[in-house]
Length: 533
Image (cartoon, rainbow, N blue to C red; front, side, top):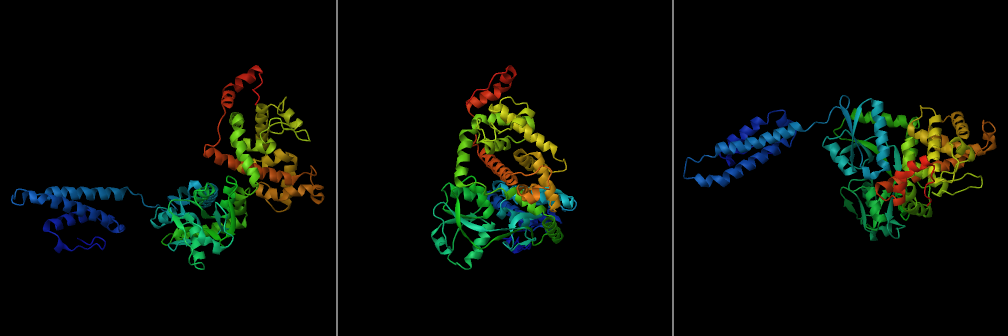
């Protein structure tokens, strides 16, 4: 058999016809195709094997009849296979120069949800600062490493520093505690871990952490799940399909909002220093740009704001609150979903955000009334109801429409220079405490050297509105600023939970809601009251 891996051939093992066939195929795989990538030789190997097998099968049919000469047919088979190989090789697009073409970046696969959104925002900001086009690949860590090493991507995000020898790493930007999570009694000491069955995603930060821990606990074992993600494994643990897994603190906090019984008592004491990575043969100038970018976003607080935006609202609810919310989302919400969607169509807001706000305000109770006389599904004050043209605050449909319109109105009052998402969080704070008190907090933020257009900065100073030494110097006076912070963060959390439940098709409609959706507008035109629930 010829030595295709080395590119040399032992022609003593082949017939003259074999030699002619090999040379034809080699001539056809002209440079640079023949020499640029090692696996070109595998195409030749396949062609040789196919041609030789065909020849061996047919030569006996005419070995006494010299009129049987299968060389032309054999050549046709081999040349056809070579042609197929060349076409495949030429159709494969090489990785473009990121300076002139597009920057290909791997971000966590979509199952990672919050991590995916965070790394995507970070990658897009990096590309904007470099002023280059970007193409994102959603992959597991194991797949990301392969993509880098096979030159299908320039850069991968969300990689634990020094976890793979075949990569070079940027400066880290986040330190995350890795913890063991089990579906029963979680171990309290590492010596107790041996009795538990642990599964982690292949190539993940969690597997890298376990390898380091095994240096001290050499009997530690685990199952490496190829193609899985930490979030998927956490879900398996929560649903009692897996005994234990490892996940970082933010992943656990996020999943606990959906599976409140998830618990973790033990840290591996091997935190993941998260970074971006290139292959060892990758462009070091690109890595230098990443390092410069990381320094900049740390210095100007962009990184802190982004971490807060994606992770800052975790751990707001207790176990009982989470269970109650999920139960209400599956029982109460379907009755009102159509009206929330109608309000979303009217305002352009996400219906799940409006629903999250309504739950925070009234627990989806259309008859809710507070001691300050704010009333209804969206807990409107008398002044707000008059402003929105609402006669009956206890009418659920009217309240939802008015509350959504009011939130959108508050959002529109904020400067257009403020990014869309930041304007939304600021508007939610104004919904709770009023636009005047929000503006006071933004002024305090400026005086404190913070950014008045970023919620994560404004929420740091908003509780100061309840302290005399601060509110005496404001235009609108004392306010329960801390309450507004809790309000916004809780609405954000409810919104995230509704999005996840919706993606799992766990939020339905009731027949009455469907009927109201089709007939609501007609009824309102006739002055008819919607059916009570």
